[in-house]
Amino acid sequence: MDFFHFDSGYLERLASGDAAAEEHFHRYFGELIYIKLRARRLPPHVVDDLRQETFLRVFQALRKQAVRQPERIGAFVNSVCNNVLLEWTRSGARTTFIPDPPERPDSSEDSEQRLISRERRERVRNVLASISPRNRELLAAIFLDERSVEQVCQQFGVERDYLRVLLFRARAQLKRELKKEERRSAAKMT
Image (cartoon, rainbow, N blue to C red; front, side):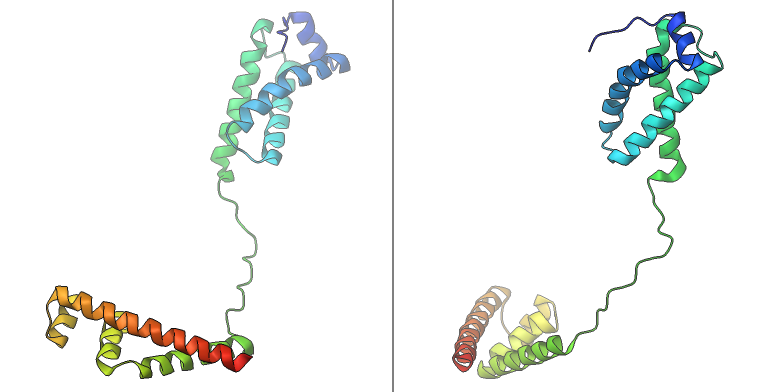
């Protein structure tokens, strides 16, 4: 990018609405403002809005002859851009209110889901019925009732270390029975 030396004649042409001067000004500062705002990871439409607001305020200040030192126009544009960004941030743009909340999705089960759930429950009951009563009680105490390890150890009359062994065996038996049930279901399907 080539640096441009701004003088009072240039600012006068901008203030008077000279199309060529405005076009040059937009090209010169537009990209710099764009880079500055995109660095803040703002959405593209917000960047465009803030950039337009920055130019609007700069041109309003130029028309009021508020810029007295033409060589500092770059710092002035940067300051205006910072102020526009801060105002946008303070205005609550971080939180967008939705006028009407979206409808909640229908969470009720449809007939197919109910059928699948019923079949799964039946399969689990069958598998649990096929394992030993002690393993069934152990798995229910740990996973369904969510009792503490101490309570389960007391109920089964075992030490904590041996409970791990019992739980491993119960889970292994459950997995074997689940695989058998899956094979039976697959055989029924074919």
